Length: 398
Image (cartoon, rainbow, N blue to C red; front, side, top):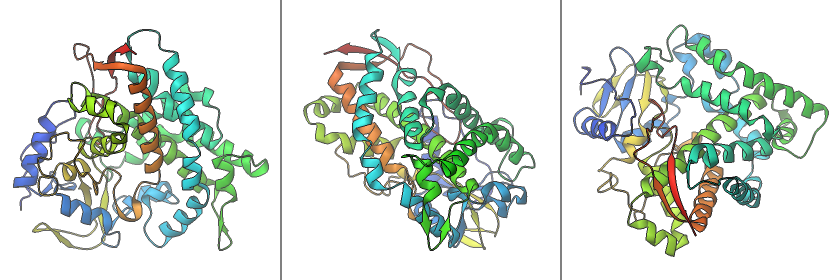
């Protein structure tokens, strides 16, 4: 139990520095306050508790920054019961498991088309596949032109620029200009999606935005703002998750003796994806706010304080996963927290898993060897998410 600051949170740079730091924090500082700011939580059991108890650990950041009230209102990722349950029922009417499963043939087709365009044996996997694939899939699902993907990449890059602000510029959720930063990063995308939402209310089509505008539970429908915010979450988080998941999978498999097993037995694709999610979750942390004074791992945390549960740390906790930092496709990676848990379990998880499984399988079918070009400079995203901005590969074709 401590409030002292052992060291600053390391930025993700692809080295083991962050993993070593997380292991130290699990052992020595399972709950740690960063200066006078957020309380960080590191062990699996404690993280699982924090993300699973919305009555004590709220998703509503406006509790500590009232300026965020309009921003979080109607955002499914920022709501607590009972409002969250109502919105999730409405959204689930349109974004169904059947809808997601029906995308499999199109995902396979798009993967083949994108890889067909790659003529060289050395290329950046992000540019060639891992970014455009989820962008096109979600654009087509929502019913917006996939040809606008250059715009989408610009908007997503702006959202990614918000990551690491607490390290670079000491800007946090409770900072006075945090709202201004978010609005600046999202207003163009919100306006674009709002235009499509209004059009679908007048002219419904066979797409997700139309289904969201028509969804109804107990006489209630989603407002334009709620449709836009869900579409925004799906578009941004869904793209980032699949892009990083695929890149992390290829990097973890590079040079692994388990690749030969995977090539010989494609039934291992699903457990490979789960082990990648466990070991390298795309989102390393989430945020919560205490609704009352609470004790976590011996530390008393006051009410209305930001909590940062480390999903990555929980997934690497030796108390839950033996030899946790080893990549093992035969491990029982069930109950990992990459997609959180409880009422805020990621709605897009089935889509991300399916995209990753189909795309990785297609790459293994097409290429006899996929190697990371470690001699090329590789930069990593900053604090909050884990993955490389570029994934330079060298392939040998079948």
